[in-house]
Image (cartoon, rainbow over all chains, first blue to last red; front, side):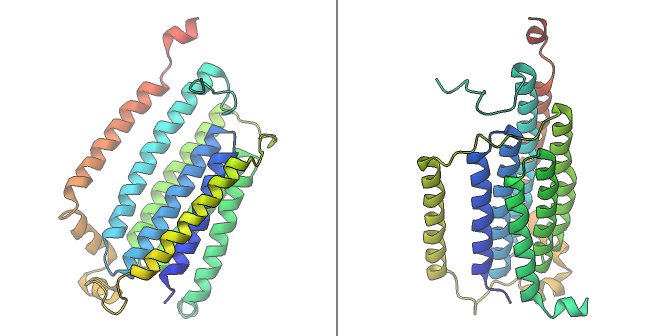
Length: 100
Length: 182
């Protein structure tokens, strides 16, 4: 039986990878993929805790998180396409509409 | 199968290492297609982790929806936009960004230590351990029973969310006549 702390450490490290991707990558699609990575890290915790506490509620939460992630990816990619059509780039350095 | 079953700890460390390696590659790869492929690898190994945790239905959904649908969507958009590999010259480790990473790490350590201090006692687990789930008809059956009783309302809300997302995608991504004309 693997202690639940190991899953927590793994999830933290994967989440930090995703966060670094969101902060350091300049490509909008890479940013979206990093967000998927972060959501996935949270799912690991949910399933591990569900096993640890001997309940299935965590697994049901993971199903909802996957639903939200699918919606977020679809809407985000639609926005990427719209931005590319309008400005001809997906580089976040050139998309500074809200930067003032 | 029998040989694999006897070394769950070793399997966990192998899977964890591969998950970490592939998630680093997702973030660090120059080519977006390479990143998407490593995202598939990462999601597959996370599904393997779920299967090891007896969450069989979640593992199946992970492979179907995440690796099957979402990453295909990413690859499709990369193909449509015909993206070139990044130059990676935009990467600068500014002090503020490094600070954000450090603070997040510190937050994880604090939350983890608090969880370890206040976690429920393992000797009094809930009523749905692996053996109880096996007795009740398997993981999928137990999850479905719980989902369509206690979580029925959130489940219906999820379907409304998907409908909203479909409408939003069509509205956002469709060609804007005024923009293309000017």
